[in-house]
Image (cartoon, rainbow, N blue to C red; front, side, top):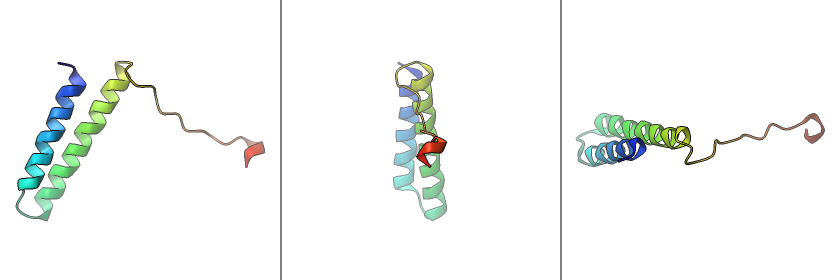
Length: 64
């Protein structure tokens, strides 16, 4: 199993915990943890060369 898949599994577990959370603070905490695991999964895919890096277009002086 790829490392990014493990990270996605962790994110799914956090989302399930968020659904069962009692109270808003716990829900938010688990939701933020899920987002962090997904970010790690996406970064790992990038590190593994599976997705291209995101490039932000910086406007040139003539475009501004």
